[in-house]
Length: 257
Ligand code: 1GP
Image 1: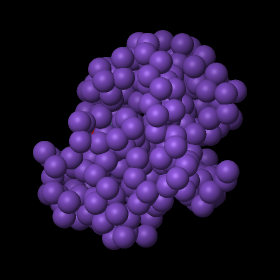
Image 2 (image 1 turned 135 degrees about the vertical axis):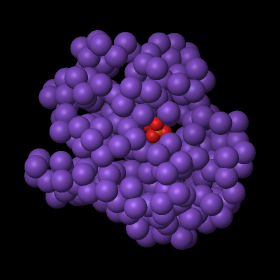
Image 3 (image 1 turned 60 degrees about the vertical axis):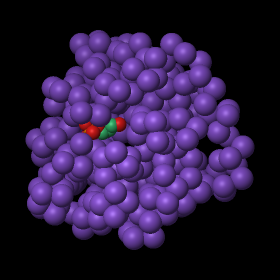
């Protein structure tokens, strides 16, 4: 079950303390395939450790774009599926995730079961991940029928994160939703969860500057994801700002190794 990408992630967490992932949503309403490939290349040059591909849109993952991105870069591509439409055999791995605080069993186990045979036949590496939505939760919470965790209740999030660990998930994703206001997931939630969890914490949703990204690592996150920043800023400065963010994250990470 332990594949190459999981080994890459866990080895890097051990040696570098923290990883930066860039999330790209190959949504034709937002950008062309060429743009998405170019963004992935800039992000790789800026030092991001992996490219996540996915989103909650109606288009799902476009196979063509996944193939083009995977061929254009050396760092791993990891699917981040918003539904059964998010499966492609062209990525290096996929987060096989369950939205544990959904009120609808479809998002906890239904979509996973419907997509499982395709995943098995594709032979893609799967990384089991418990997915937890914290307020505001944005589009993911609306689509995923989530009972979002209040931002000032870290202990509720901790209960779910521990349950995720005991159920065998390899990662717990603390998600505030893409484009979340308020500077990402509150540091008190990240630190409360990280303090008690033995598996790595990945977090994203509203981290848009070096301070908030490094702050998430200081609070205990092992991986920080940026989507909106990469989509909006990288085309403007060709990844200059992103390299500063990655550097801030690595500096914070190095204090933990
Ligand atoms: C969304 O956590 C990711 O699933 C990234 O969020 O777009 O706000 O960076 P942002």
